[in-house]
Length: 464
Image (cartoon, rainbow, N blue to C red):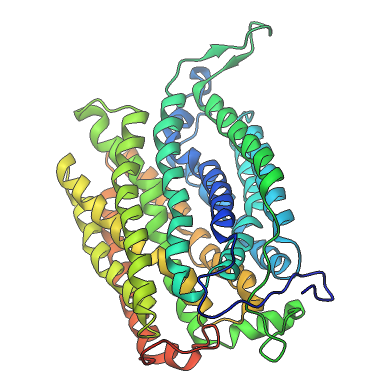
């Protein structure tokens, strides 16, 4: 049924696993997420190249300056989420996704041309704006195409793509960055492309290729769980009505705090762990950027992919019995990953670190597979994309505004003394894990029983 706003609204049987084309849709949005996540994370694994003097092909940055590349992307990304999420709740998600993917590819290519810190930060900011619309649109589409009892598994498979993207960006982005400078055939002799620039061009080209394919195959998914007599109805509300519907839910506030905690763990593992391992193993084992990129991503991502799938399947089974099923799995993930941060920050044995990173990824994956889907259990279906946008906005405000610059400032001072504080910083983040465990306990036993809406039906055997 097409509503007045041009939205396709369709009802499906509560016993059905989802729409007939749900797996096609999932593969398309996973491809998009893989591409844009590789784009945003590529810079994490070419940091040593950017620290090189300009005469050697780098940008001549120090650690404090380099620490701003995260906020330069994150803040525009997060602050535009409110508008981006609302767009996806009201208009064509296909158009939003395709536009975001193409813009991301163009911006990444432009970053490969920058010549100083200011240009790099501007490029990262534009990349953040370009990617802002995609994730809320994709999350809302998955929620509409998969029923609650299959949703965590679907989200886990979708999130596989970002784990794969981190591995690819870490290994191949670092490998390309390690290549010697090359002359571009048919151009003046002064036109030299250094490895880190080439890595941006290659990943941007992959993005354009993915966009061309999706332009042909991606279709607009229907909106399946909206009801005229509930919440914002089938057409949704104004931006203020939508925001009001969300912020009145107590569980939402606990959820965005846990998401901010996860953001700190992700920043420390994605951006600072590679630099920490480079400090530890560059001299002792002779590791280059490819070695560090592979080591710092492979084991965490293997664990994360395992945690995503097992956590998604387990939660989909538990949620048939209890509304707390998804939160139980999230809680277990945090209990597992928190002590691993202590091990990673204090040990220098590659074998011990591999095991710790594997378990860290396992716990983080179990949490991530169920975070968005748990929010769908308490939020009006017509406000889902806006909610995802608000989660990203809260992460930007609570984490990105200070975490990387603060840590970079401290690390620069330590480096001037011939030391590093990154190991201590990684250990300190375990305290964030303890805080998140407390928040999830409050969510499970205090707010969730009052806020649960699900799909309008109760779990099969009870609601506790």
